[in-house]
Length: 110
Length: 120
Image (cartoon, rainbow over all chains, first blue to last red; front, side):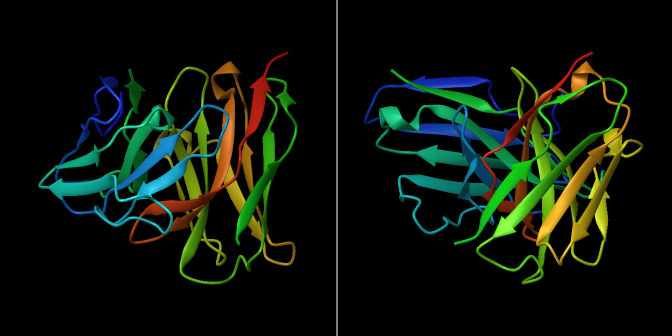
């Protein structure tokens, strides 16, 4: 059972938009920055979003993040088949004194 | 460009100790306000944070692994290491090393991962 809750899967057609949610509590998301990662099988996870809503250099603006209270979201617009991957949110948990990931959301682009 | 590369045995017998190293290239492990950490992914499951260490040796470990995990840094080799004692089949996973930005709490540079199987 992950500290951060994500939907296990989501799907949409190419060109559409999806929103992946990440739900936490007052000890983690509410007080700490949230990051998002894209993970394709057999590769290294890639940082997509950090500090809730910032994109590292090279990440297209189709990917955007936001946070409100104890939840965060990752939006992906203009879906492409290459976006099919597992997406994870992450943050620090002040009560556990450790970093935590969500359980991951598998995105399928139909 | 900073790169990380994991190394270590691909097979460990229970209840031995799993030992992995991560070599940092393209940059100095001492530079910046960073920690250096480990994440694993068991087969069919999600990412699991294991812990982090800075070059002063300060560590934070996942609570459920704290009794079995230890990390170290060798700045002369630009390397950091993970040890996990008394392994069981549940420790079978792909292990990733990564750079961790403290306070902001994100991992921005990752190794490609190394598969470790625990089996007798």
